[in-house]
Image (cartoon, rainbow, N blue to C red):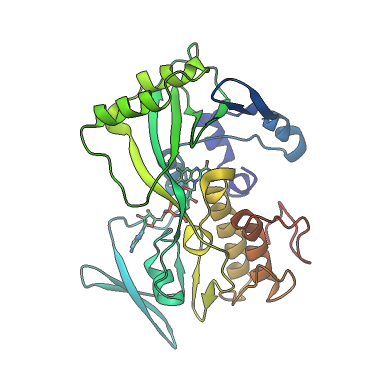
Length: 315
Ligand SMILES: Cc1cc2nc3c(=O)[nH]c(=O)nc-3n(C[C@H](O)[C@H](O)[C@H](O)COP(=O)(O)OP(=O)(O)OC[C@H]3O[C@@H](n4cnc5c(N)ncnc54)[C@H](O)[C@@H]3O)c2cc1C
């Protein structure tokens, strides 16, 4: 939200996205594991903790930019030359630019050409996601609940007035798919979470449109020592894909965009290689970008930023 405020769109986001009061963690049997009082963050940081749907956020950002946004154009590769970069598309066309920022997700085509074709790592678990429509009387706005059972979990929170996003996670092999109808998938999830102490789990699943359910393997990558070379760099999951466990992948992509934009506006060009495991290696902007995400990508968290990299400030 601090980054979105810097872009001048925090008010539009707040108008849709419910501010969370606390993140609650409990077992499927109903024992409280802990509570994170995120509602207090607004006093500490000046902005609330919110959850918002991807399409709502995309709409707000699209309306805020003056440049045209082209969709449905599949990138297949690029050619770097002295004057710039040519980007090649699946329909055989190309576009030229001064530099290239590959923000094309965890299976990035730009990354594959820049760093090699290594696939992302499978975490060992699968996420089923969906939306339920529940009125504010049925679902208190700003609720966040994460429930943990043996080999599975269920998380829910609202992302717009009356819209509850949920996620059912279970261990399993990669590459699977649900056979049968969406209604059968929903029945499978009801059975998986049957008997859980929190009655909201069943209420949410019953209020879910079966066709809204998405299944996906949860992927991440180990932190990379290089994100960019020459006129090409990466951003977001293409550079630093992380699992959803700390709810930071999209947040880090947005912050990364601001740090990179600040560097480009300064006229310094695309930051070169970074070294997330060596806090003071590389150029200052490259250090900042890497430090901001390295602790989220890897288990051991670094507690102090490298020199010249203050949390919450944008170059
Ligand atoms: C189950 C789950 C829950 C999550 N929960 C959270 C959360 O609570 N908070 C949070 O901050 N993050 C969360 N994340 C992570 C978040 O979704 C990602 O980190 C974020 O979407 C990364 O943004 P991105 O723009 O880098 O990539 P993406 O959002 O993946 O966007 C990449 C874009 O590039 C396009 N693209 C891909 N290949 C090509 C190509 N060859 N040519 C042209 N375009 C292409 C794609 O269509 C897509 O539009 C979650 C992720 C998962 C899977």
